[in-house]
Image (cartoon, rainbow, N blue to C red; front, side, top):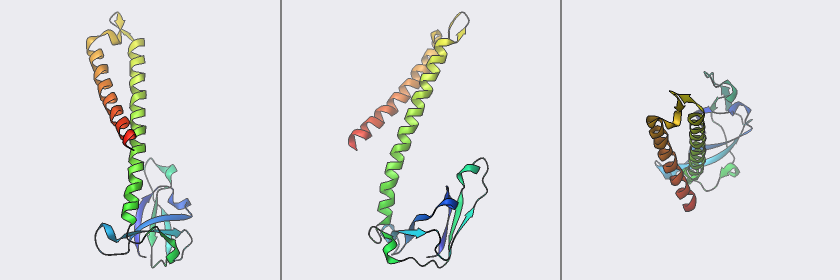
Length: 155
């Protein structure tokens, strides 16, 4: 196996790596997943310098004529792309859920602040423009929450 993969979070500390590699013809059906052990000859890990993300140990992986045993094939040969996409669906779902939760928290904080802050003799949320902004935020957040609920039900 030959090639390079960059921007692997925590890669310098990894002992095992799942890699998607071309084992067949062109297209989606030519990708397989292989398990690479960190001490395999020809496999090197190099920490990348990053700005503002020093704790992630962002890494570049280099494969120089790495020999991979047949038993390190994950799943079926040339089906790896589909395994990767299946995993990405779960990652995207989790990210969506976390994003909606964060938006809901932010909305709750905005409402609490608008109820506690006073300007021009009345609470901030009593000003029409602020009420409209809060309502618009709520509409967007609740629409997205509804979307997540629908996806969850389908899953």
